[in-house]
Each structure stands twice: as structure tokens, then as C-alpha cells.
Image 1 (cartoon, rainbow, N blue to C red):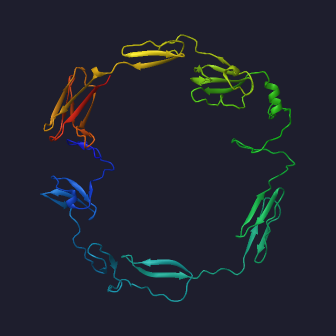
Image 2 (cartoon, rainbow, N blue to C red):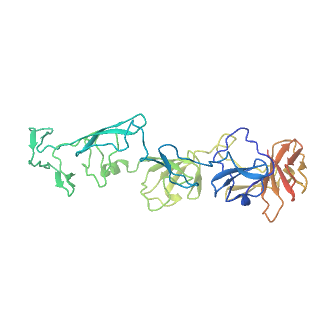
Image 3 (spheres, one colour):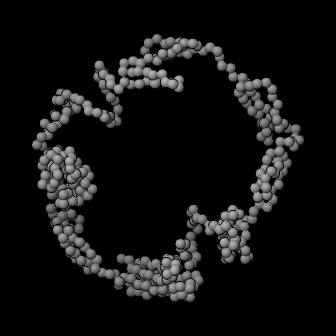
Length: 401
């Protein structure tokens, strides 16, 4: 359903972006317009305007298209096609069909005259030599010269295999399992990953050595192991789903408030796992951080009191706040009576901070929203339309603040 605007719209010289003119297949479907009204004729593919009592094409259209010198019209009046006429050229500055003889393998240059016509095509034959040589070099060894008829063998080295493919390609592969006799050094600051397990000595011998699982387990048994922050609102990381990989001594700091196995947690609280794979609140120690009385800027212990138009109820430590004021003293309504062009709603809000909505009181059209000129004062709202309607227009007013 289209939105009804009952007065002119002033865009204040701003752009109408991606706007679309009304589409109709004929003038008859577009109906009778008013002076200056536009619509797009989808049959004729033209924009039309209502002027002097009729729909006329905006800016006029092409009436006749005539082919000029050296051109021919092979189309229709509705769909003209203009072609170059190669048979009627009489000028002496160029020829239509350049003459050349012999055979050629490649075009080396093309010459044209001032009108863009081709005046000459230069060609030459490309010859592929019957014999050739090229050099092969590598990081070590002696350079070799490969001549016509020689075969170049790409051989694999240690942990490397090569394979000749079916499409003149050679593939160099790294073996799946390799053994390095020397030391492996990986440079760079990026992250390296392993799909399988990496086996290392059980006990590290230097501060920079990787530590085995056995060594770490022995080192942290009975000690706290800080794991980072815990979002109690989203349960990230997941501390409540069983089974899990949480170990005794794992410690977390609450970064977002929420509930944990039914207990309320606030930012700054600390959780400590008392056993491996904890599954309930009894398996955790909760260190409360927010134990002060709350005020306007401090999160802490407090309660909620009911204010004007507000009720507060408690259940299991949870407060429910409800609005008991129907706000009837902050709303008003009126109408533009059918046949009239304006209507006023008087109020006692003592402010112009009000929201106004208007709609057509027509059940058949499902009471559509319409747009009127709205003026406000501290005691009234007036809605105005450019022309009277046959249905009442309802005016709704609500105070803000």
C-alpha cells in the first residue's frame, strides 16, 4: 500500500536518491493528471508529463533518422540501424579494401589516414629456428648446456621425489615422512602448528626448552593456574558443560556479570576449580569482589525501592520493576473532520516535545498512516492537509520526557 502524503514535500534542494517515477503501460492507465505530473510509459519507454490537458513526452523524441554520406539505414522507423556503406566510396584519400599479396605469419604494423580508415597493413614471417640450446644452472655443481635432442632429467634429492605428469609437467614432492640428521631451525614470527603430537624429552634441560605434559602436570599439582577472564553472561569460556578439560586449581576472573550454576557473579569476582572436571557449584570456590554497598557509581550490595508510577517485587533475590502509570496524562488525540483541512489537539503538557502521528480513519483501507503539515505549541498541536478528505484523519499526540 502506498503511503499517503496530503501536502507538498519540500526536500530543501537535497537529492532524491534512487527515486522511481510511477510506471504505467499507457496514458489511459496513468489516468488524468495535474499540470506538471510525471509518469514513465513502459510500452513506449519514454517519460511523460501532464501539460495543457494531455500526456506529452518530456523533451520530445527523435522523429526521423536519416543516413548521410557513406551510411545506409537498414533498420525500421522504430529501430533504425545505421551501417557504413563500403560500395559507394568515391574519395581518393584511401581505399576500402587494401591490397596485399603473398603469405604472412604476423602483422607488424597498421597505417590509417586522418579519417581512421586503414591505408596499409605490414606483415612479416615469423621463423622458428630448427636448432636451439639453453643453459641449466643450480645452487651447486657445474653448469650444463642442453642442446636439441638432449633430455633434461629433474632428479629428486634427500626426502624429495619427482614425477612426470600427463600434461608436460614435472611435480616435485616432499615425502610424507622425513628424517633430518641435523637440527631444524624455523625462522619468522608467525604461528607454527602440528596436526599430530610432537614428542619431546620428558624433562627440559634449558629455560627455553618446551615443557612436556608430564613435567607441567607435576609442576602445577595443587597450585593455582590462572586461565584468564570469564564472561558470566555468555559462559565464555564454557565452564558449566560436562565433561570438560578443567583441572583442579584453574582460576578465572569474571569480566562480565551473569549467573554461574544459579549464583550471581559480578565483574571482579574470582572462580577457583576445587577438582578436575567440575560439574556443579560445589566444585568451585567463588571469591566475591563486590561486597560494598552500592551507590550511583559503585556496584555493590543494595536494593531497589519503588518510585512514582513504579512497583517493585522480589522473588528468590531477583527484583521485578513494573510501570504502574498508564501515562494517560501524557497523551492526547483529536481529528481533522472529513471535509475539513485542519484539526487541533489541545493539551496541558507545557512543552513542544511531543510525537505526532496521523492516520486515515478508513477500515476498508486498513487505517493507513498519512502525512500532514504539523505545527506545535506548548499547549496544542495542529495538523493541516492541502485538500479535504472524505474520511476523518485521526491525530495522536504523546509527550516525550
